Amino acid sequence: MNATSFLLKGDLCYSVDPNTLRSVPNGYLLCVDGRCAGVFDTIPESYASLPLLDYTGHLILPGLTDLHVHAPQYTYRGLGMDLELLDWLNTYTFPEEARFRDLSYAKQAYPRFVEDVRRGPNTRLCAFATVHPDATRLLMDLLEESGLVAMVGKVNMDRNASPDLQEESAEASLAATVSWLEESAGRYQRVSPILTPRFIPSCSDPLMEALGKLQRERNLPVQSHLSENRSEVEWVKELCPSSHGYGDAYDSFGLFGGENCPTIMAHCVLSDDDEIALMRERQVYVAHCPASNTNLASGIAPARRYLEEGIPMGLGSDVAGGTHCSIFRAMADAVQVSKLRWRLVDSTLAPLSATEAFWLGTMGGGSFFGQVGSFLPGYECDILVLDDRRYNPPEAHSVQQRLERTIYLSEDRDIVHKFVRGSQLF
Ligand code: GUN
Ligand code: FE
Image 1 (cartoon, rainbow, N blue to C red):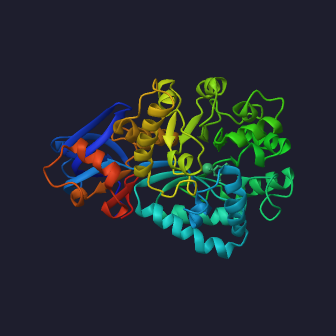
Image 2: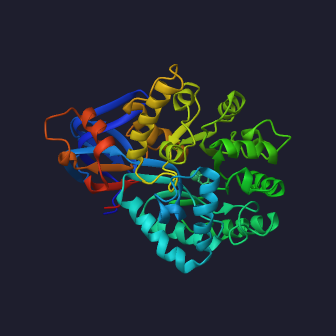
Image 3: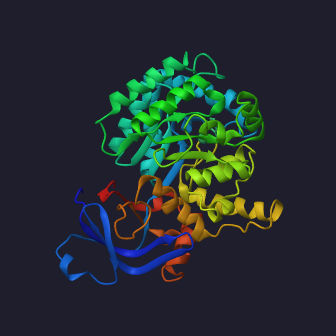
């Protein structure tokens, strides 16, 4: 089905702000031209002629956004979880990503990733590909076909990896990026490019300068990594002796947020006061990746502080730092690590509630894509229809309690229908 105007009936639940959930049992969601036009207790008379999709008894939620995921790393999830970041990258990540130079390898690997995300609860994603333009385009083609909405980055890296992965020079990396952008232009309705310098240790100063210039010329969004791991932060100090910190190193190339440079920085586990102040000033998005930060022993990001300080934030799976793509799982992980941080590190930062974690995985990350992640009027109709009877006995719980249990207990098989921008994926 492709009609993008309809009424959908079920037990609706969505965020209004970080601390407010709205539930409407047996309600009607009105979708007009792919956007929400209201939630009602009874069918509004002027729309009575629209098709009615009757999902009575099902839980209806906004789609989830994965603000940080590495598509090529899907192949080796769960490996090397005894290592910390830099050793893990050198031992597992870089050798695996090097294989995507071979398009036939990418043709085997990427469909599995895309199909898994398509079947799961995420409707939007910001994905890293690899340095290879052909494989990156293949990933973009597959995501477009899947019906998901995605920003995808061809990764830039011209130093500190092995020669079989890193690009030959700053000029070569820039040229590959420009031709990738040109060949992708006008090709997609749901997929768009995002500039993706891997992280400071992978990108020389001349490359970062060139990417900053390219960003300003084309107003591209940016994604990268920030202050994830202690050895990494120390290394950045050595690599950028004139910078005042890791965030300032990006900023010195004009790649750290601001009005015309929407930016996502993954992790922000070890950001100091100055870096956090700059993130707030520039409205840099934090992609909070609790599973990855646990697996790689990176630490626990102060998510409560970011919320309190008004820093935009969403959740990331960071596959393969994280093992699972589902952002429901990231919500549960975010609550759990926030409790450990409160108990063991800083009792002044209260743990996250399930309501806050749900907001992060829907509206928080969704806002990077515009009006996404809620059923408020004007929001794009990304919708999950869940049959939650497997773990929620009928009548036993309120709609809000069913949502809480869904965060912890649902599996992809419980999602019976999924819509993105009002179009039905299944
Ligand atoms: N920093 C630079 N590259 C990566 C990556 O692939 N994963 C994670 N978690 N951190 C990174
Ligand atoms: Fe990452």
